[in-house]
Image (tube, rainbow, N blue to C red; front, side, top):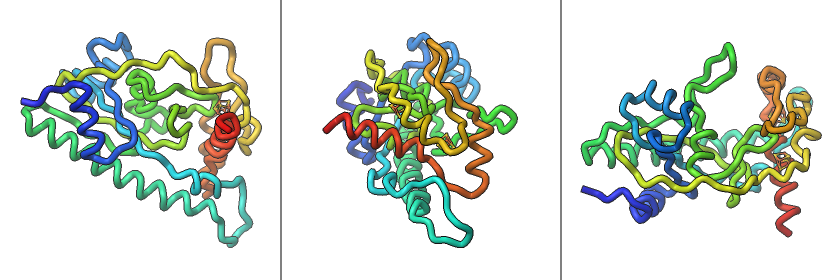
Length: 233
Ligand code: SF4
Ligand code: SF4
């Protein structure tokens, strides 16, 4: 029987070729929300594993706000790139789930794009919330996770398992530097300065309406990446 400690997690990270891997305890994290949504999907779930892969900076740099009808748009490279990343994450999450199932633990691998209740634009399980609890990063004013390694250039997926894995500690640092670059860059004014105590303020319908028009957008990710990169030099 495998020992589910930090060495095991490092081994899983290498074996399934993901850049980030963290664990939040469903039973001990203290998050009622995590407990409720995890148990709704896998009754008896004890751990959630969050897996993340980097989105290449070269692709994010090609993102932009608009294009003329019929014009080739370099930002469309981003779409095929994220499809590739999603495929790799799908392999990783199913591979790790298969490993845990072989050890006798019921395990549910989740898709890279979580099913969403379209009435409220709310995912049935928040990967971002699980990632925060697993210490992978914190939520920025653009509503996405910001990690110390890749900023918000990250794709996530999760698995739920009844195995008890060693949790990875929650970060004490807030990686959002509150520069508001994402808010200024948002073409649909979906992002606003949040009220005190809130991580973000967003009108998700404004964002969706803009993106439904066929635009890749994600310029909030690009603005954040540029802002965080400037800070690092
Ligand atoms: S994806 Fe585009 S429209 Fe949506 S919040 Fe980001 S910048 Fe605004
Ligand atoms: S662009 Fe600035 S304010 Fe927006 S999420 Fe990134 S660090 Fe936070």
